[in-house]
Length: 322
Ligand code: COA
Image (tube, rainbow, N blue to C red; front, side, top):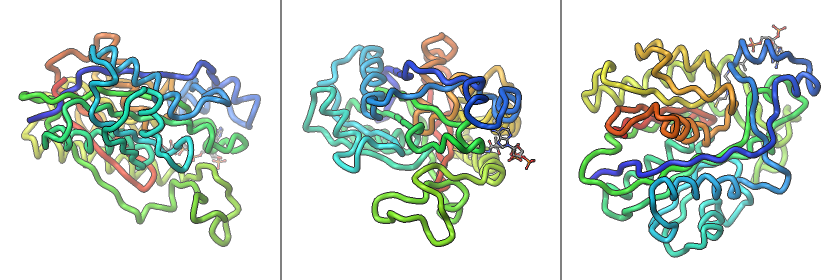
């Protein structure tokens, strides 16, 4: 048994923050942001919009695309770093908003790899026959943990949600997923405080916002993304030349270009949304997938590689025949 993608959806909050808006907030320029990151604009959630609200809209669209009702779902897995509240988890809140209940509702926290961790989890349930139709979501309100006074980070992030309905299928579908993590990199991309650590560690004054050593993250990201992609292709016996699309985490266009180069995939076979969405963490890969399916680029039967990396550091990839 395999899982296959039956439908996708995405939701972006209405408010758009452009690089020119940011020029008025911190000492930066549209030119710097575009050339260093590829980002031109990002969406920001309204004050009363929570992560589960964004997840709900994306989920409704994915259910519609799959041609099923919420009540047909028998598993929910949500990847997020910015849950509405400590508990109930976002998957339970989404379940309630969808008006369904009873099935497991799992939240996965793996920063920007959250969707790949969620997808890999749901895929296992479907393969083992424990779920037939799973709703898999990546949703974030990163704007809530962004330091809007720091030009080092505030130009990078945005809010949004992407959702996928997975269904059981005798033919693939998802061919393989690979996940990895290395906690030794905990100090290069992190939020210093949380629930049981309420004060920043000694020597740090940072608050509950994203802290990052951008250069170091960049180097490790390129290395790990290239490595995991080659690994998944090798394990499934898939030549690079068979890949129709690379849909990477949308953090920085230069990281994406470096990964594509290593995989020998021309940039016109890489789905890019970083210019419009910025880095939306766990939401970035499912939103990019939805964009490329809805605009007709990704066609049924094509081979697609999804991949991402994030704080932890964590990384993940999924190879699928759409
Ligand atoms: N506007 C203008 N200048 C800025 C700036 C901004 N928003 N942010 C940083 N700078 C300055 C720096 O202060 C530095 O100035 P200096 O040379 O006078 O010291 C200069 O730009 C270059 O900084 P550097 O950090 O070397 O730039 P970079 O080319 O590495 O790009 C990032 C910075 C953050 C865009 C890049 O490192 C990156 O994308 N890293 C990965 C981050 C990431 O993906 N994080 C999320 C992972 S899920």
